[in-house]
Image (cartoon, rainbow, N blue to C red; front, side, top):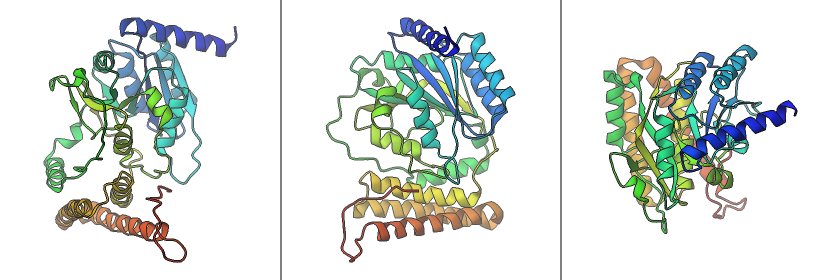
Length: 352
């Protein structure tokens, strides 16, 4: 038996062990990473400390993870007899594309559930068990996506609380797609202490049924920072069933500062991706755009106020928002009109 056959056999054995404990459902953990080896180590270590282990751990490398770090991660998984899969992704554009990394992992995943984790997230010991239990109790088969409760220590300060209040007042992501004909709400999410339906899913801990992601993958046209790609996926996939936040699955987001976007890029993608996603999902009626405009104006005015105190981080972010809005309007004008100037109904082109 060669190494590849042995690896596939080991993965199948691990999957079978988890299946027997949770109604034959298996879960693959996927971590997409870019040059954060110490954060990644802590993330994988928390996965290996779970009361219920995954059938495999898949790491998609969008950076330059060293061979030493790869061996260390593999040994951590091997110690718990969990198969470790390393996938190296070569960036084909100026900036790495997170949706492409996620799709690559899905094509290799063997679990029934694909659990995505940010590389700077650590899990409480019961996290994976609670996620699997929620899917196992979905006897109707209507639950297609979940996430967990995310604790973010970096957002406990006064400034973070003010920003959170500002976005709530602005009604950011308040509008949701107008789906019709969805299946009845599954019984497993009717207990608010256990799970609550939501489309405001958080990419740092989101999970989906593998079959749904294979049929309708992440949108790889969302390049650069890909801000909002988690909400885009939730909006799109929710037409197949229900998405819920598992209240008993808890994790911590440590917000590693390495390779975060600069304020200008963050501001630009905040507006540009938001407007693209809203238009893409049909939230482009006159009343919808009035709500969008209100949200953006409230956030912009808040940034103006913050910039009077700390101009260095907030003026570039505000400038990026203005440029992002201008780019979106230019895309609408150029891509929704024919060469003769007549309107055509092609929707929003999501090219990066």
